[in-house]
Figure 1 (cartoon, rainbow, N blue to C red):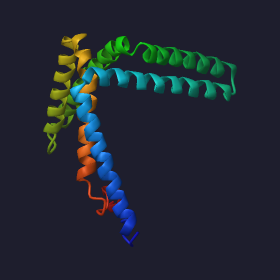
Figure 2: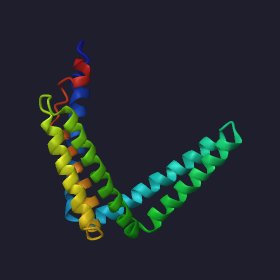
Figure 3: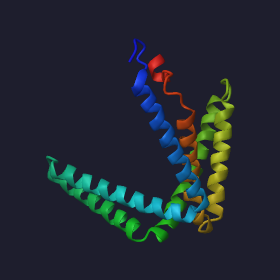
Figure 4: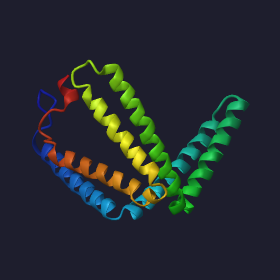
Length: 186
């Protein structure tokens, strides 16, 4: 590292190489998710299931160390709920995809309304129109997914995650490892 906190030399070159490789992998997986959105959606559902199971196990562990009987009971009950839901997601990912898609639509509808409220509160500020566009697009996406449900389950989750992966991959490819990040400048 030099005096500015920026990595130099071999470590910087290795970081750029890893970032480039990781970016390409993200783009390839993202394109595959868009081309095969149902397969990607089912895979995502199974991954979410395993994460929910791990969260349930964490609740059991936390409950084990809780000091009061009430906390132990509640943590155990929450842990059981998490493990049962996670198990369902893992064992029945295709049918669970329907539920996750409906939850995604509800999330987008709520987020869209919140962004529009934020715009209404900030509309006099410079560039507040971004909140308006974000709210309208997110609300429209939520309505589209909700109105076409359950058919939207075939494409929504896989396509949205695919787009996100491609965007992340492009960001990794575009990032120049030799320049300081914003946090280092402040």
